[in-house]
Length: 108
Image 1 (cartoon, rainbow, N blue to C red):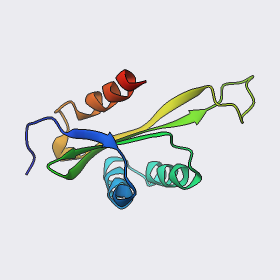
Image 2: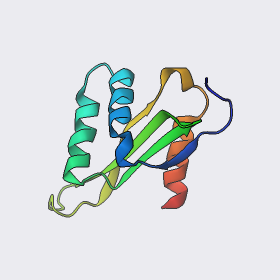
Image 3: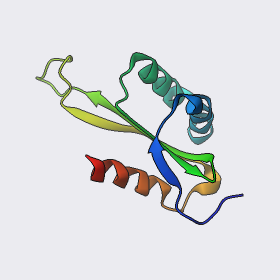
Image 4: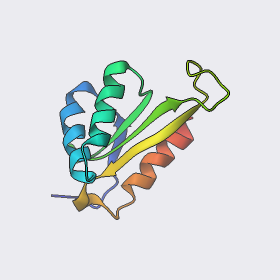
């Protein structure tokens, strides 16, 4: 059951990887986003990965990964790109995505 309270937004833990993949597969029309997150996680290239939990149930995920903007060399990332951001269908409209972005913005 979804509560109307604010979800707990915290860093991803290894035990949530499969749940995050399922959330991304449900949220997007292809498996591309889920595959990219899996690859970034494996490569250790996802410095920010947060989950939103509602009563212990995963209802959201946000990830940031480094990118380079030319003329910077690809080995020197200069910014973090937000992608993907997903919220479970039944939890949408509660501000979970916005709250996830604010957590990252205010903790930077």
